[in-house]
Length: 425
Image (tube, rainbow, N blue to C red):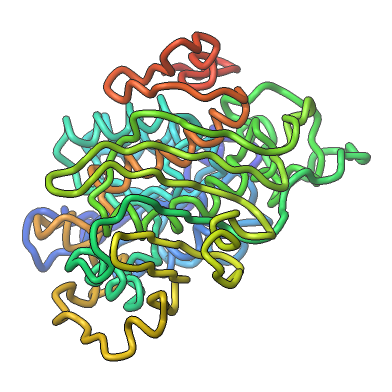
């Protein structure tokens, strides 16, 4: 039944009026939510927002979706988000998008244009242009948003941000942030079996160019194919860049200064390593900044330059009075002898009530969620711009207002890519 969008669109349950209570009627009312993509990472949203009314569940792969698909009595089940929005969109307050990167944009923009609040998994979308359209539409609609950068709630990150903002290492002019490991360049597919009965492969491909089904793409390795995913930049970049973006009030870079990595794979597989350096302008009394994003098992060259250990994955701030290196869970001030008697500033960043709770509160008219698109959207654009620069193999000035790589016209097809199979901007 679930192989057919039309049949799936009929759903399995008629919702009672108590389920359809509009969330905005009262701060005490539950939100009506739809989840698009409920397997894998989508399970975090299914569980994190389970206190609300789940009106609809959408997934093209019922094996991957597993028990999440039928977890809520009364929720209607769909394979096609378009059918879901047509049938129950007017009943929704909010929705989540947790699909592979290449299929974030179309369900997200459809729901936003209907005025629905959106929780979207990182890295927001598949191209810089898609990200910008979503950010602008969310602002136009005045809806609550949250990007899935859940590590924003970690207490160590709060303390690091407080240290940088209160000048513990002085004005910061240089940042290196990196993800360790060498994931990427998966083996080329050798098996192209029949599409499983539980998977709608055409819907899974969505706006991507048609190709035969292979288990080497779906359900997980898609993230290491440029047609579908954004590699480790999109997978981890938003988490890592969240630290300097927050601490240093960053928004849009003005230039790509350096691009390093192995040759771009002609088959479209993401690389095992890469490095891109961005220039950011002065912000208030903060000086201009160079920020390096790297995917590397060796750590950035700055570690050797400053005589620091490779901590696997992390962020290094270089200031006029010292350095701070941090992972998500712990940090160290360098040179260590200079900070033996250092007194930490009074804490001013409150603990989060919970990443999903932030979103629920924002949807009901409370404070914006901490990773709303106004903050986290430019960060997502930057990590995807790193991929764009690597694929082009060129440095350039970046016109962030118009999304133009100055002097590199061939960048346009990556910034605003062509969609396939009838999908449009």
